[in-house]
Structure formats: C-alpha cells, structure tokens
Length: 312
Image (cartoon, rainbow, N blue to C red; front, top):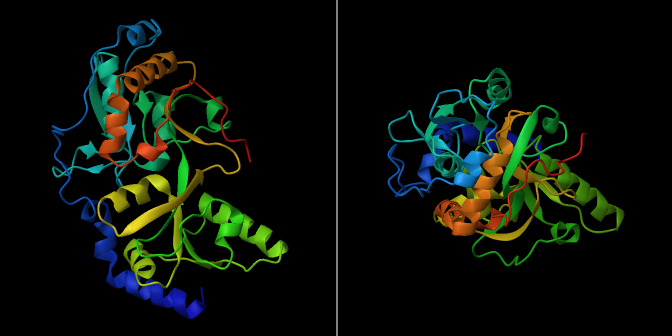
C-alpha cells in the first residue's frame, strides 16, 4: 500500500470513526442483545463435573461461577443494550459451564490487559474470552479447551476466488491484514516463501478503519481479507456480503486452541473440561456455537492443558 493510499485510508477512517465504534453492533442488528438472553442455550447440572471440583477450592462468591469477559466485538462479547451486561458467544459458553457446575453465572467485564492479574489475584474464577493455549501461559494457568483457534480468508461474494488453502494460493493477490498481528506475520512468511519460488508477491494492504476495510473488499480494491475467523464468520453470517474461502490454525504451522483459563493448580480445570465434554455430547455446545456462527471452530473433545503454542 502506497504512502498516499495509507494517508487516504486514515483520513476516511477519521470521518467514519463513529461507524467503526459501532461496528460490533451494526452487523448484529436483529440479534438478541438484551441482558436477559432468553435464547441462550442452558444446561442441567452435571454431577460428574461437580465431583471433580477440588474440595480446597473456594469460589470467589459462594454459589457463583465468576468469569471475566472482554466486551469489544461480536461474536465474542459486547455490552448488551443495557450497556452493562456482556453478551455474546463467550458468555454463552460460560453459561453452559456454570450450569454444569450447578452455579449461578456472574460475568465481570474487564480490559484484555487486566485478566491475567485478575486470575492471579482471585478476582474471578476463570476467564472465558478467546484465550489461546500457550506454553508460556501454562506456567501460571490451567486450560480447558472449547474452540479451535482459526484464521480465515474472506472474499467478496462475487469474487472468482474459490479456495485459499496454501501459501501459493495468495501469490499475486491483494490481501488485507491487520498490522502487528499474528496473521500479518504468517502472511509475510508465506509471501517470502512464494517470492523465493519465483511466484508473484502479495500486495499487503492495511486499513485503520474496519468500515473502510470492508468497502475496499466490496469495491474490488482488495482481493481477500485475512483475520480471526470467528469475527469474520459472524459478520458474514449477518449479511456482510463476504464468504469464507479458507481457514488454518491461528498458530500456523502449529495447532492453536482456545480455552477456559483458570489459576494454575486451583483445582477447577478438570471439572470444567468434564462440563464442556458433557455439553459437547448432549448437543448444547453445538447449539451455542451455531447461535454465533462459530460452528467451523467446534471441537469434538475438550482437553485439559494440551500442548500449547511454543514459547517464542
């Protein structure tokens, strides 16, 4: 992207800043964003899960499962129309776990940077918000997996591109990606490998406003967008005029998984893993993911503390 184009995108982005601020709810029109969440999938108590809770563990609030959430974008979580209650796919998973454990769910909104300290200090029992399992995090946290961590390539509905499944497929394309992100690093590595093979380079584009980014894709100024699959899948399902043409692990070439995080050695992880597996088996888990168009990221079995992304 040229310097002039970048300046133009910043200028337009400033004019559309209000649209960007409202983007999470703009493509969620028609969804239930009420704090009551009457359509949320609920579950019965799972005795096997309750028995796995360590007798030494003391919940932050007796009778409640207190969970940190980071309201900011759907399908993960945003504030409901009461401007106080986090709603979205992650609170739905939290509800299934709380129900399985026979507890009332209490969600605490936090900034992303604050959840590790909150876990360590005992401010909440768990964090459920798109947290990837890594070997570094496993030194201080226990994990119970519940989603694949996927990146997705999305194109305009009328695009001639049918599939992007390997580095060679992006040769010569104009691809939008977020700056200073994991997906940018992957795309750069793919491009370097392609160029070394004598293939056409990727034209990497950056936009500072999600609305401008979407317009560039729709107008044909870009061929594809690479980003977290969950967000793009949700937008596509809400009539965003885009479609998925390829997914791969967010830790490529390593496999990455999203998990419930609890304090290391607290004695909750096995109970949460059991809860998730019970909900996978009875179908509630699949219904919860489908509600937010996250079925592509479904797992067949929850695992406690699997191999995480390696330390960098």
